Image (tube, rainbow, N blue to C red; front, side, top):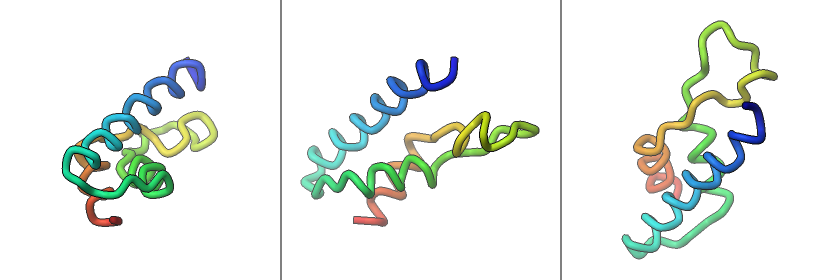
Length: 70
């Protein structure tokens, strides 16, 4: 639980975004990848921010956000 499981999961999601950007011929922007994942997250009800961070990321939503940021 915690950062021990969240870090590899978010690393995998970031990799998917970078791979999709490369496949579509879009530039890879690390800052946009981070913002996309954060903005795509859905907060977990009744859980303080300190315990959940930005919430649960949504890869489809993150991809749409990334494309709009680039």
